[in-house]
Length: 208
Image 1 (cartoon, one colour):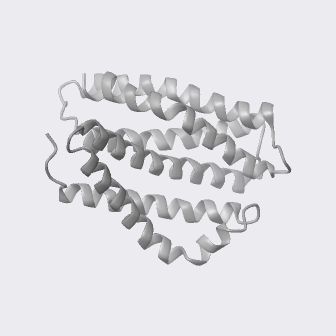
Image 2 (image 1 turned 60 degrees about the horizontal axis):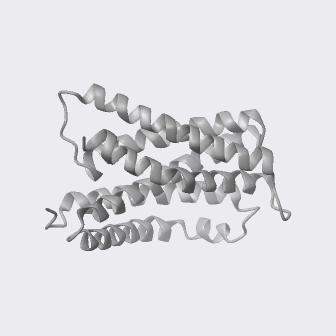
């Protein structure tokens, strides 16, 4: 039964908020030419570094309040916040690789998306194990991690296949730049895979 909003929840929220803020600034720098409003984020980076953690903490507290009667809502709220951080890491690394190589589509785009997704998955495992689901399983930690990887690999396939389909087969529409479309493809992939990941982790990895 969830009855307290712990200091660890506040600390975790602040850390995740800072992760999101830092990568948001990085992404904004990469896309400022395609989305002019991102220039405001760059100029207000110090405000971003303060306001985003505060907003994340508030969001987690709201999830806690909703989860007083249905604890799964608190778990899902934390999962979504972790997912936002995973997304920031995913997009940040993806845009960094695009910036360093100038490659925005094709087979190498799929490779870049795979690399960025893997970094997000590592972040996801650590936070979901110790914060969202508070798994204390150590004796069978190896098996747990294998189950996590198995669920993640399916999510990985859904994520990368969806992003690659949007970017490489549908292609930019409405005059959208290829760099911005690469990020839109990644967004669509996240929406498609998020529910698979949550219920897979909850029922098949951490709460068996």
